[in-house]
Length: 555
Image (tube, rainbow, N blue to C red; front, side):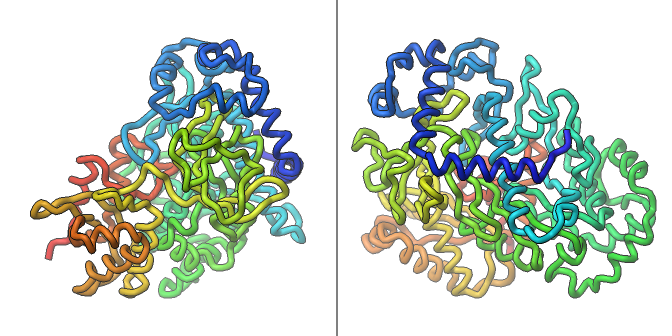
């Protein structure tokens, strides 16, 4: 199938506006539909869905849940049992380790795919069309450079499984009908048979396409990583384009080499065109220099990605960024309000049934959660979510801040996850505080921090924070005291614990160049699909700790 960009984009924006104007009505109706449809499932009978008449009764009779509450149910669904959590069958099992812990499976139904396609995909095209409203359609949309690939992995019985961002593409191609002509790579590159590092393959096809109009990624770090790969290997790539060859240093299978030689014959004209760009000036505005017709980049960035957002701003030139969606394996909750505006997501009422715990009172049982239309600008809340695939009053542990309203639905920014904290003596440093401290550290020291992660450590009986940092350039001798001061500024409780000597001075171990890239390759070698790779922050397993300890710079 070939996407009709204009039609899908218009439908998405129209549906968003219509439902946002009637948020309370849509939410109430959606909950009734979910409860009615699933009233005869095992879970529905257990909690008497058929007797629940309104939202208040739902909150009173159905408990707030975590993943462990569903583990046994989902295992039975994987084994083929039906009518467990949902009447609709699960046709996809989303593999997610979240940001910590072992991989877990979350079922997805047909409804979830439809929602992703309309709101996540459609909103991008609708907002891009709005941005370029004075240009003809043929100048706005064209070939897409899709940075991820969607290997068709399956459960034992043939049902689909994979990462959340790839689910919609596997769903669209269930019957082999997905039209890959929208993309700059052949279909076999989008849907590879095996998990293998094929970045070189994708880059070769992308560089060959002068008229590329869009880059689609999930997070900005992946976009920057791909462009840095092109920059580092510029001469090699241009030589290969010119001669139709594959450099001997490239480690790809024979099948991929045969595909490249078949699809990409020698192209001295394109190689010569790219050589006209002076390498010394390539990096600034690199994307628009290589692809002068580029119209937008899709990638989530913002406050949580300060280094990579800054790098992308240098690389993209005047090309605008659509910051895609706010979502997780459990669901897609919000869509970016407009291009070039990070950290601003419209929560759409058809995503699922929302509830919110005010952050100051978010302990279970402390108060009745609020509804979507009851929130206040400037306040922070923890998200509870009922989706279309069998999660009921699921505690996401996401903390969001309401920054505005879009008609009668809130616009939020994601702040941090409550379960991603480091806590030695009650100070509870969350990822937002750590990221802000490292950002301030980079500003004060004048040394960009490409990546960091942190773990608990102990020395002489006193616990302390151990940071691993990959910096761009040399750092001063007082780096640890500067970071200490920054963290004290961003977490008052940490400052108190330090003053009381309950926590020892933090330590920094500086990493070798490319450490985080090597970690991603390490995951890929273990079969982890990297299409929605997030920045690692918390070292919560011995395997992660060993990896980064081995990456420390040796003087």
